[in-house]
Amino acid sequence: MLVKKICMIGDFAVGKTSLVARFVHTVFSDKYLTTVGVKIDTKALTLEDARQCKLILWDIAGSSALTTVERSYLKGAAGYLLVVDGTRRSTLDAARQLHAQVRETMGELPFQVLINKADLSEQWEIGDDDIKELERAGWPVTRSSAKSGAGVEDSFKALAACVA
Image (cartoon, rainbow, N blue to C red; front, side, top):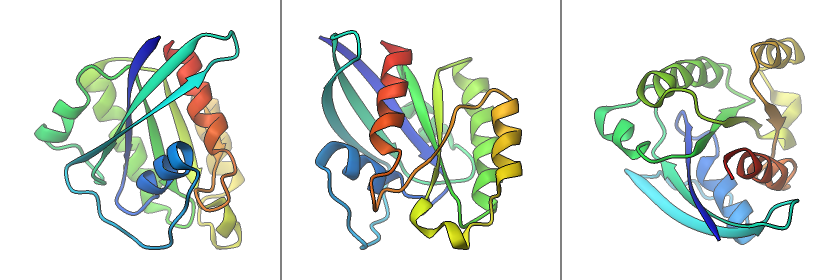
């Protein structure tokens, strides 16, 4: 079985922990729990080509810039999920900065961008033009909702297929 380390990065309160909980345990909680340092979960899955893959998911505490410690959490990562809160434009700016820092630290790694909180799309500050701009830059973007589960499983599986 392939074993791959995947990091979850993004600004605070974008939904990283909730996305992991939805993917690993198929649950959602409205309670906000701040991640301190890093929280690690695992999930085994079968890829489309029938290979077995175990993802070790490192849910890194939210920030708009990576500290030295957070950069060390990236060591050994096969890829990462970059999470943005669709209701807060500032988290998109933070994602751009985090992406640049990951590239500086780790070089080119496979990644997926999740614009989270699709269940609150009427409150979004990030529009279709913003998403198209990311896609033109080569960023694989999915609208997701940890609450409803929309886009969650597909994003994790797409990243797993890229790193396997």
